[in-house]
Image (cartoon, rainbow, N blue to C red; front, top):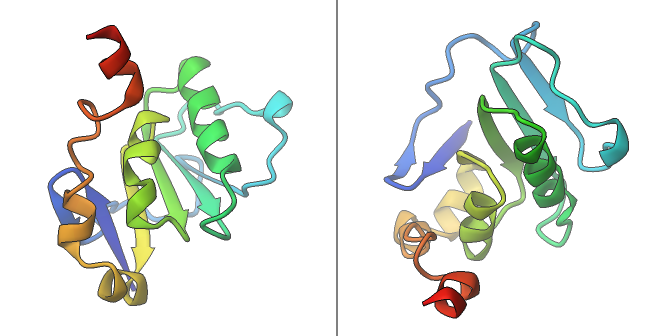
Length: 127
């Protein structure tokens, strides 16, 4: 099973269309950024994080948003609570983690970083 993390905390996966088919695109972290695109009709893109030390998924998310993708964007895998704010800033709507990770890093650890819009260095520099 998995837990979905959003700014409001932990929740179940409410994606009801399934993960196979035309509406969903699963991307590995080693997707070539030059070839990155979302086919028309894509409703959700999940980007895999094979390790918390692999930050390529953040770049892919940012590029998708810069290229106009407005659908649901989910980080899946080994994202830790310390990376939640970065995930949101790079364009992810939510993070999908395992039940084991949710037990090791409880909801309070993630919600501590849910105010991601106010606590970044760029907003402090602009202020």
